[in-house]
Length: 56
View (cartoon, rainbow, N blue to C red):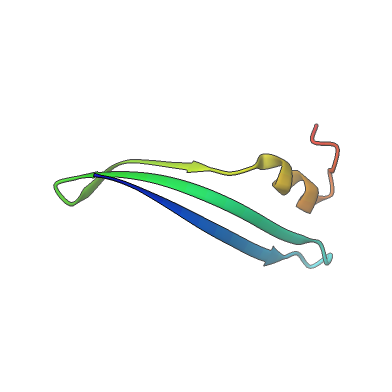
């Protein structure tokens, strides 16, 4: 069975820049156990929260 979830993560850095990230997780299970897990998220959001808005 494959399950897809959408998650919104929020975090406020001590410097005052917010970290707002949307995640999509794809989880595949077999016999009640996770056999595959994959997250999708935007790394540019992380760079912006760390202060590098150029994305490089």
